[in-house]
Image (cartoon, rainbow, N blue to C red; front, side, top):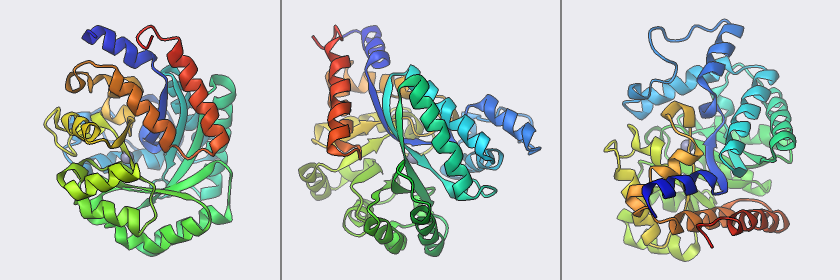
Length: 341
Ligand SMILES: [Zn+2]
């Protein structure tokens, strides 16, 4: 396939989105609008999302917190949810499991944000056909009690759209073992579990699987530095939700293509890799672009894109009936594609 053919295929292939943060997906114009609405000053002298400013994870997370400050009331949450899902539909995203990070929005009680988000995802499904479920993310830099209380809140305000919990923010400041109790509580309540592991050692992946009950790993690029852990994850079919662009900018490698090669290494090792775009406008990306940037590392071969899509169907947390329906939608779209037939 030529690079141009690969890029066109990346645009039209159906997509399943398992690693995207609502807070990180707010369009810059919307941030400016909401900052005006709530009279919140934005950093002067530069664009809201200046990708070059993301010199490290910490700098990025401060930008993230600014967005958390301006998305406040239920209508704001409705708006940002609807906007990110409408955009996803334009990239042929059929299904998304989206992180909702209550600690990033300190002015908003959980039931208020949930009300706005659920209305937003219902409206987006009606208008654009994209289905979305939610993963409530615990702030790993905060203490374990706060994490456990958030899980209690999620259980108290149980909603069918919330299907799991996750763990985000800086891994270096929040080792996963700190959240054993919170994750155990979520597990007893029947919630699925995943956690970010981007910079930590492969031993953290063992903690995620064995101590936190995670059935997915977000990022997890370091797994291939440990042959035994790689073999285990391959044998158990542990899915990895990788985000090529965001992980490359100032976080995992900073080399411009290191993460891409690492993702290919994970695929070659037989791991169940899926691709998503994490915090798209903050990193100047979108669901199509994250597939396109892998083109050179994949030799512009479309087959791995189809394989990763298959991994995502398997990795999502739908029940068997809904998963079969999603697989049928994916298969129907691929059947029409000239590059597949
Ligand atoms: Zn993430």
